[in-house]
Amino acid sequence: MESDNDNHTDGRKVLPPAAQRALREAEERRKAAPPVEPAPEIGGRGGADPARFGDWEIKGRAIDF
Image 1 (cartoon, rainbow, N blue to C red):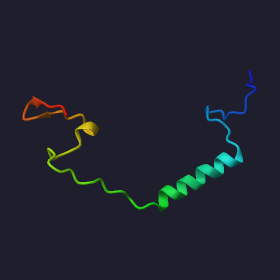
Image 2: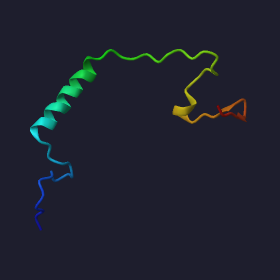
Image 3: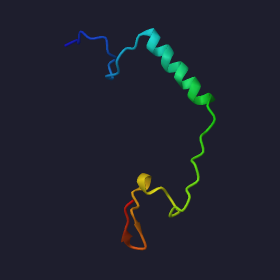
């Protein structure tokens, strides 16, 4: 049975030309932007970011902040 919507066969929606142009412009801005360096942490624990890597302990003790 054939569907009566305008979506692609893989489920993606068909975007109007204005939306496609906006996505291209946003991608160009992202590519042109300089990379952002994270600010240095003062008095931190060192190592990988626990919020990103899920490491919530130091020397076997659970920590929280």
